[in-house]
Image (cartoon, rainbow, N blue to C red; front, side, top):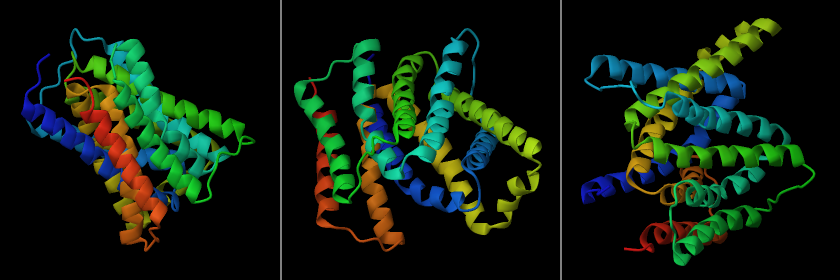
Length: 303
């Protein structure tokens, strides 16, 4: 399928915007989790994202047509992301550290490259492979220099976090395939709707059984929590889903996936700007490696 230069530019801009939003989302996630549990936070963020998109669908001329399309594959996609990714990540971080999660998440582009080669027959050059590994090394280098490492005694958490990365890689590959018949809007609306219904059902059931419905509503008294959820719901769920799905409709899954490592660079910058965190030389070196890797993965392929 021939893609116009304008379409390619918008795809790369979407991938870059996606990484920037995710990079800032770590700040807002930390704030939200100070007031609410992981599952409740997911319920709120997907409630906001699904509500906003439903309003856009209801009051605009966005055409959603699911007739004659492989709906079961779209359900499988939503099972991978957001359901599988966020659930596995949340439980994985109960048994492992956030640093271990960051290190493992950096390997997502490698998993995506492998799955894309197997299922989509995507071909990457040797230089592209080296670039992807360079971006991964940049992230790992930053975490190692911070004194982080993977503790193999946290085997349960490590396995769950690994499978969360595998779920995201699977989403990237399956979405790339499904976006030949679905529009980015159609895929995004299904993902957000299924995410909201599932996380709300889990959260409500848990609170009803334990008799703690008041703790579900209590965070809404905090302005900081509401601001965080609005960012996580609108920007970090709705906009990132739209930008990711649009980018995947135009560029290869392996090229898109490597942009996820840019979120590490953005989170470092965000921490320095808003939390006063120190930026060391190893942050700069790692960031240069990540950016170079992203550039190489997208520019050093076959013409």
